[in-house]
Length: 270
Image 1 (cartoon, rainbow, N blue to C red):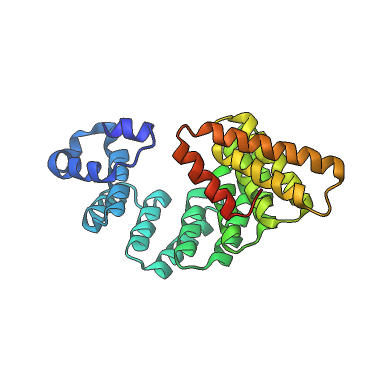
Image 2: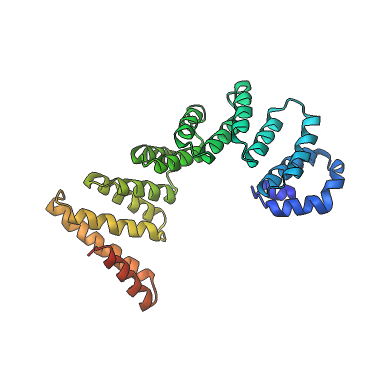
């Protein structure tokens, strides 16, 4: 069961702790080659559930068998993090990073702690340094985008999404989010770019209702912009009408269409 959860990348922390306490705790020595990975799994689950004593017991066993292991020391830092002793956890992580500057897991934990402390600017700096080494880490680019959005630095957030598009050009959600950021930035040029990426997201997944709304909103804004040439304005109006018809078609009941029309009217979009 534990192996299946690991392979499927499932946390199931409460279930793991229950199985540990009722079955495995007294039989840990019989797990053979699985012993250490199970201990790690239980340690993380215990920290998730705030069962610090169980986590400490697992770390103690691992430390005895692997003294000086960076991997075990990382769990010690995670325990300090769970106790909200952030400064001590950062000190442990800094010492570990000095011993192995290419250890990505340690750098990620440091970013998590800085984020938990509300030090967004420092978290951004740390994550940028991390991405200089691990440029292909898509989760890190996504996290960096979120941090920039918290700081309302939309240009840099858009850059992060551009990197993600290069890594995964067939993911409609990435195209959609990039379009949303460009839409938020505003301006005629950004609005046209947002419409293009909303359209691409819709092409990749025709059932993406959020992208369809995005096409409607961007086309409406473009058609009402004073910078829009007459030819493009006519095209934008047609696209607005098409998007609205598609949205209405997606709702089956009259009540849903009426509610949708009310929302659109409240946005003062015609």
